Length: 344
Image 1: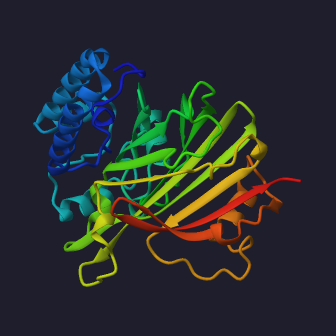
Image 2: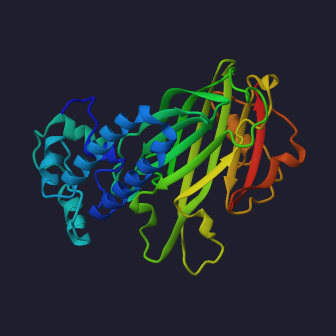
Image 3: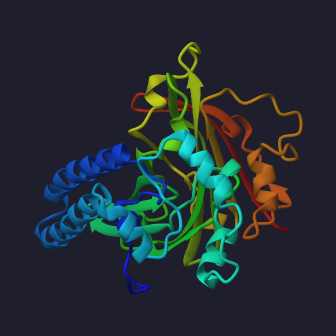
């Protein structure tokens, strides 16, 4: 298989450890999503969508049949992913903790070193993205660590076709990634206030996040850092955390469950005078604690800007009441902490 050709797992946006039931769920979501988007994206996207669906159909057929193990061997996977009991999984981890053949291939050894340890969660698939421009902005499809989501950017920004995954392998409930943006000077929204510069739509969570029977799983927190080190190019770093709470805990709102979406203004509405300033937003379901020292607390947006390599903030704008508030998008309500900082 060519190194540039995506695997069937990457086509579906799932990890190699995915179960057969989850493959069907993802397949149905992709099918429904494609049917919904085609009228919006127009005729030019029709052939591309048909080609994608042919690949999705083929991937689904292979991964749901007995061909899966043969396919895994073909692409060099050394893990058996599906239709195994918990006891056989434990035995497999025990039996494969050390390679039985000391002369095993170097690619196998690299995979064992790079793979997430069992106690930290399942093997993650490589991040991938594709994007399409519409009359209202840009839609970016993202598949990352078993998650599937969409970013809907307003026309105020241009997506520069570059996404970098920053996820921590030891945290299998949080994804981190960075995208490059530029202001779109041709847009009527350019350098002005926009209520929803970005809408995040979470389509699918990996099965290991919601592994507890009877639990309710949803988005509990996300953070953005918008850094403008160069006037005509910016970076937007996004982290999103999902969590599960027991059904006996009534404080976990149903509107936090997937599918989930939330829209907001990540640049905080400041225009070009904010050049070289970093802006961090932290959204959470839980009410944030009172922070006696807002910029030194490790959970504060100010601390995130001090640690951010693009900002390295040492001075901060006084946002007064804007630093902590509730934000509502449709039926979803979250607490928002904000900070704007720069290096002197």
